[in-house]
Image 1 (tube, rainbow, N blue to C red):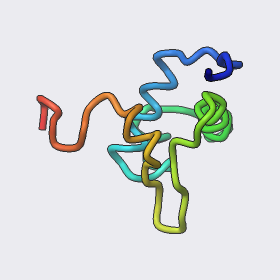
Image 2 (cartoon, rainbow, N blue to C red):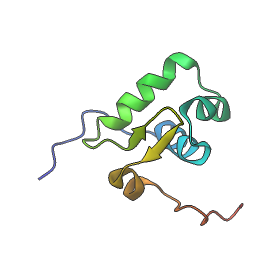
Image 3 (cartoon, rainbow, N blue to C red):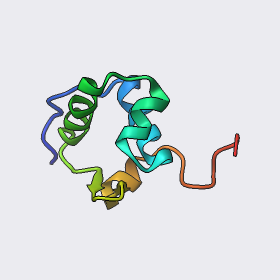
Length: 82
């Protein structure tokens, strides 16, 4: 059985997650959702506290882990505004 969440996930976290996925970069996601830079690492940390890492970070940007792909609300190409 999974451990209880130590952090409540809020709509703001989900917006940041989706922006990071859509833009492929935390920096671009920060600009897209108008977050302060200091909030960036806190949001990533909060998301990682759900028990699984959601992102793979590299020098190019971010990619989803398998858990992140399951957490993503809209699979790539499935958005109605695309």
